[in-house]
Image 1 (tube, rainbow, N blue to C red):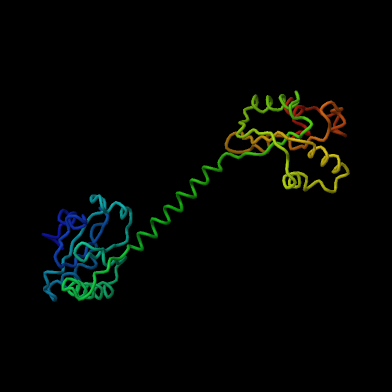
Image 2 (cartoon, rainbow, N blue to C red):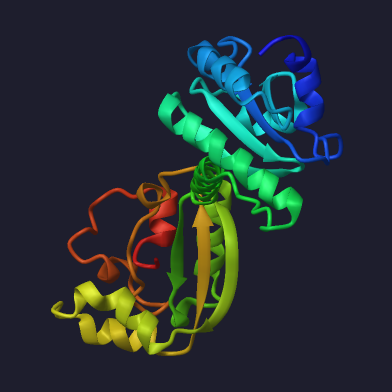
Amino acid sequence: MGGSHANGWAKRLVDSEKRPVSATIIVIDVFQEWTGPCAALFGLFRTLKEELNDKMLIFATACADTVDSLEKYRGRSEPYFLFFGATVLVNVIKGVNPPLMETTIREMLKNEKEAFAGFVARVEVEDLYLKAIEEAKEAEAKRKSLEMEIDQESTLVIICPPFVGTDQTDAIIEQFTSNEFEILLDETRPLDDDMIDAVLNDEMDDPDFGPRLNVMSKGPARLLVIAKGPQGVHEAIVPYILTVEPDGDEAAAAEGEEDAPHTPIESAVRNAI
């Protein structure tokens, strides 16, 4: 596989616009620059070339690192062989398998002669090995894309109906923004039954479930989707649901905690999220 089968000539063979259009079977050993061509099959190729003595059979080597059209084959150490019937990819062999290689060469040469004579149609194949690699790369890229999309953790904040439009709501939002929370969504609308059930699902057995349900159902609620950095937002907010009227006694809303100290954000958000 030397002389006219040198890499420079093979560059033209893998270019679909420059491959011979006459009846030929071109076996191209696609190799990496650091590995070189597959020496293990040199003897077989030489034997077949001498035995068959057929000008239709052409062997060539092509370095994937220097041939633009072979870019997708770069970075692979396993021997790789592309079979072209004139301008059409008709077979692919991966790895070193002399019996398979010999059988395939003889079969492809026979098929090419019949196709050139018009007896059979030349069948173009898809490189399934390369397709599998490309699909794996696409799946990995999609996975990484999804990771990036969900990298910023967010949470839903519900300001219950009695507090919508009050100073307490303004104070809550001010505390979020001043503490580097990002508000991704802000809308005011009634809570449907499914959302109320989801919010109060873990509290159905609580003695004050009824009053909480009543508060949540009174009218439009303020819904905020907030985030803070790539993660940790859930630990940075106070997860309570508002259960008292805006003008009610704040201590009553936090029964048993009236002596506990609160940060500004806890005072504003406590029992409101």
